[in-house]
Length: 132
Image 1 (tube, rainbow, N blue to C red):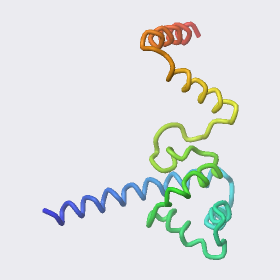
Image 2: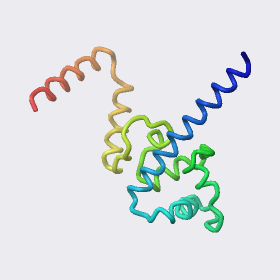
Image 3: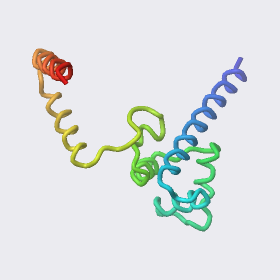
């Protein structure tokens, strides 16, 4: 029974690495950087040695995944959201700074609203979206 749990865990871990590798390659392809330069470019973006970027090859070949401290800088360099890159969730591309600022302000405003105010705001948004 224990060995089955271990195999299941290993299979799930491999599946997550495979999915991450596919998203990483997709994002790299979007950059138009030649494929043979991907690993060196990732190393440069992360301030690591470009001469032996084995870690980046391992990421792209689903052998390993990046550590948390590398995810944000990698995602930022790729122009994608870290959540999309690591988990595949949400929007792929990061918002521009001005739009992100508006989103942040809206989140802060939502935190201050009562339930009644939130429901009124939702009704207004629904009415607005139906009129478009």
